[in-house]
Image 1: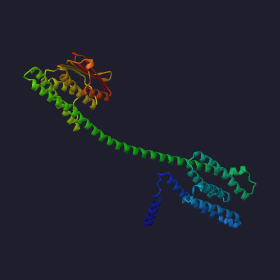
Image 2 (image 1 turned 180 degrees about the vertical axis):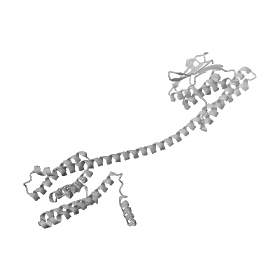
Image 3 (image 1 turned 90 degrees about the horizontal axis):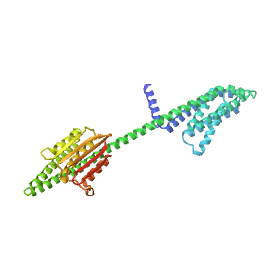
Image 4 (image 1 turned 135 degrees about the horizontal axis):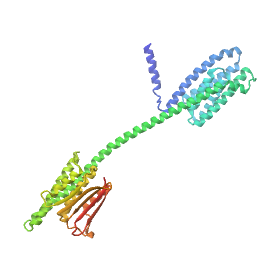
Length: 418
């Protein structure tokens, strides 16, 4: 017995497997099959209820009419469920269903006829999504039911019954038809809202997966771009600094006997440039290995100032506020200070600098000035280093000004958001 029950359950599950109830079309198709089975069952009950009455009264005409209505409804529903209808015949079949529903009410008595009527109305509500059409269907359904019920009453009891009396007797059925309409509409609205929510959630999940995939690719691209940027930075800064060190030491070596003081200046500048190059290489290695400097911006800038003055004749006065900035701005400010000091010594022959980093009107102000030989305004042309510096400042959303007068040194002033 248990095995038979288990087999029946498996057959039922297998029969439903082809229906995806998250797909409205599949659910409606399954609902139509359920309605079809119930209709056939109701037709059999109505036939069993009235066949004896037809025989006793020898009402062959009513019996034949009943059979025609029942067979027409059965064939129409079967064609719909087996997808045998084409588009032009679909409206015709719906009209036949409506006539059959009215026929059951007109030729039979009892609650089974009303149930069949409601089942056919359910088919109509499922076929159309337009709410206005549903309201018109309800109005037509009530009117058709009253007319069909009047035909039934006049057949059984004669035409002495007035329309008012017929309407009074059919109030219960009219209420049932109205409640049935609202119940079906509410269920359809909830189901369609559920489908919409499910579809939205699926789209969100899909978007989330796409975003995660895009984010992973973006991370890979960002890492690659960062490595390329660091490689370029090593080439443009440390490589350039090392080349400058070699050139300065070579120049010092050539003039050390003729002009020891000038040679000393060049060696000091080369020494400072070598320290900066070493620090840049260390920072780049830290970045490539995924480790930051681990010190605050103020400490890093003070270290650069000390490295530039230790063991040299260079004097740097500074006033540095403790300001927190992003990693990108952190590296940029450190590199700019190194480059500014190096350029001041190498190109301007500077021996003293004033450096200031402060917060002003919620903005960061970087100021570096020296006592070098300076340049005339018309001679102030941005070389590769200054052009690159200006491009980096603008990329970070800031502004830079280069100020110089002959004999008055050189000044770099950068303003950017914190």
